[in-house]
Length: 224
Image (cartoon, helix red, strand yellow):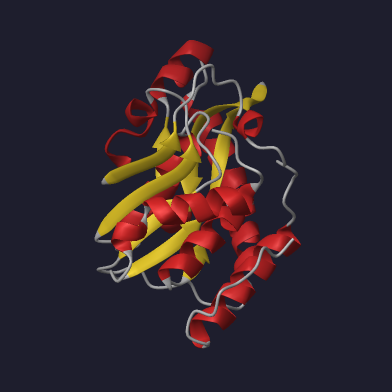
């Protein structure tokens, strides 16, 4: 399955998630690309949209390799297998996490601004990204949604690698992927347009979704 762009993927994902329409749902997009996908899902459901901000914890001498992730509300995921394989010490994990917590708070302020987070208590949180790679940030996002009071967490993505369910484990109550193709090298290979998404676009998505919710869920077009 090839998607035209993230908005196309979001519309298709929204169709798949139609069974949740009418439920007390909050759609949570992972910045940055996941928010563009999530906007389409939120609009189709007539549900509020918010960000769920997470930060990868990179191995100190190989930052692109994730040894875990952190999220809002104190959520924390550590990949013990990566830690053992790389020999990262406990004090190094603490140092990396402290630095990423500072960046996490900064990103929340940039993306959410003065808007309060949408309450999740006793609601269904639909966590949306543009795809799954390692799964560490998605796991942290789902853990954060639970920690923030969500009654049920659904992780929904357009594309994920085969066997992705094992990577997520029990972090989410339900997993939805439109496609799990092989071979799987990178999320971008399944999009015609996988251009980087700016912070400004994320903020525009959130602002448009808020206006749409206040106006009675008037359909919103792709903000790009």
